Image: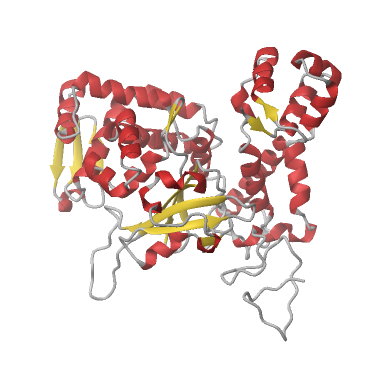
Length: 480
């Protein structure tokens, strides 16, 4: 039985339909008293009620996704945690009430904040003086940039694009591809279907370019610096652009982006999605993931993919009636910048700055190449099982120089609800019922409710800061 507490959404639907509680209750074949209890979250909305909503009001019950509002609340609270709003004394409870009654207003606030931060990031485009002090802004990354719009687009589609999955499956069938010889098969496909030759060229010729397609010469140039997994990925990317360009454009158009740069960036993201679907075919990869209990090392070798490619593919297994574990994924650099994020597990990932420093994705930098395991809990009581690993992305290494130079590292975090951890091999040997193994985490310091965190980097906007110079606790910031 489906039991979800979606009273606010039910009430909004009734108001939009201009119905009284008695009128709506009659159409749902329930009593007005019961409807009133549903609207005030005193009773769960059952599967039978959802079915009647779909039948009587022609609504898509997927719109009643109970995860929408918590994520929107987190995003709005993070935006309002900007020091710019400190003088207004906004409380989390007030924001929650607003989101519950009118999520559209919450999304409008995010839109305005995105636009404002985008303007602050482009001072050369402003014609007048800037009177707003942004010295203490959460991040120099402007929300509302194309990368943010595309990330939201992927999240809105649950990181699953059915038409691209079908296209990848058709490619396999039409050209009789195989995992053992996928690189050769894709080279042959480019030649026979698109009349494109593949040239593997030396590093001194390609420079910092990893893939380049030259349409006049009908030539795809690939750098020798790429390992086989990345070469296959780049071949599949180019095939999607050549063979399914119209589909990529149509999918990107659904994003209704506000900046011109977002459309080509979305097309690139979708081409990457297609490439992963080609390298790791849906049904075969899902079966392998389940049979190996999500052993990332085995999946890498079986499908000839990198660690990041496998982790990202696991987040896309959302096909109806054939779903995998709902994973979240985060990619960060050593400075804490988040360059990739997707939340399929329901966890809230920071949008405007670094995530909580207690996440194991940051610990991974201390042990490059080693998988870190963590059981974590957010302030709302939700618990997650997460693994993380620091990697050196191909094409991003800085060559060693005796007077400087460095190795670029990123860290990948992959996690799921703790209730599903027993389906993951890395949970073996852990007593998942032991509260002592749980690490308390948050979204970011500015909106975290934990007052005694020893790793707090800045004060929380949820409490009035009180400094006692004669007392020092775990954090430099204390509260009454």
